[in-house]
Image 1 (cartoon, one colour):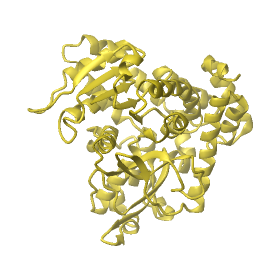
Image 2 (cartoon, rainbow, N blue to C red; image 1 turned 90 degrees about the vertical axis):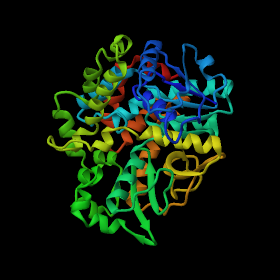
Image 3 (cartoon, helix red, strand yellow; image 1 turned 60 degrees about the horizontal axis):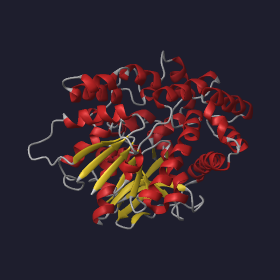
Length: 448
């Protein structure tokens, strides 16, 4: 079987290949095809993959770099899509335009996320049209951010054959379960009650042998301090909340502190990545040991993730720095789809009534059973008023962004900015949208 990676020059693609070559997923895929609009990036990543050390007996899938999207998609059984329209420079503009207006600059949350979505949705719709024409039976696993918005935008074209992937929710559940003393194997969510949207969700129950272990975990400062979300949200706030939030809710619950931290930093996260990786891809093309260069850059990149939520003295856990997050989730989904081996994972799928109070056609991030028929949401308890209120407000914003692109309606884009809870000002929203149109002139071409 053939796996095509659209955005094959992406920095994390070697993690996917490594997981396919050795371990539980070895032999699942015969060939991997990398396609990127910047073919030199795909060639650089191919060099990393080809020089990647693997265990004895590893089964390397055949590797191909294609300069044609049509050729790359032909014959694909699965398509991974992970593109970044505008590149790292675009991310910096997403951040800086927001900060100039005194609002949070973050690539998927708030103003920056809306700008990112307005750029990503049009390009992803073109990719989806190509997939529906060239390999209509392929399963599409979307990594492109903002993952929930993009997955929902693709549903009308791809239906249930597109599934959105993010590792933050699954990572939260894994870390909390370990802290509670009941580690969960990948692919099992027995006793887990998690509800939300992408980058906005809550772990609300963690059951083992008929007992919910979450209240005891929330009441134990020592155990809360043993994992990232426990430290980020704190032993004082979490018992009040009665749940463990996705790490991205830091930007909502500690908005003032996050904004101060981001605004005071000498460089944004995007600028940090640009500096870390400046010249990286040319070096990967020429270095005698490209894998070593890539691995050093990867660890530096991971160490700075969500830095504004940690104290200057605090570093990320070694387990998080080691990798093994989203690519294992994606490949577990892929194995379940291709081999009809059921697995339970938190992914982004059509709601279909799973979360009461949200539209049936909205994409939500909830525990799902994945098998050869696709991903079907598992039952979750109804969200409380706070959770439903925040999800409803953000979901309305997301749907306005999609409709703004599909219908070429600038007023819907403006409404999305104005009603987002991290912007919450029509005047600021007006200036933000105008600022992003200046930064990205192609946005103005969307409004017909």
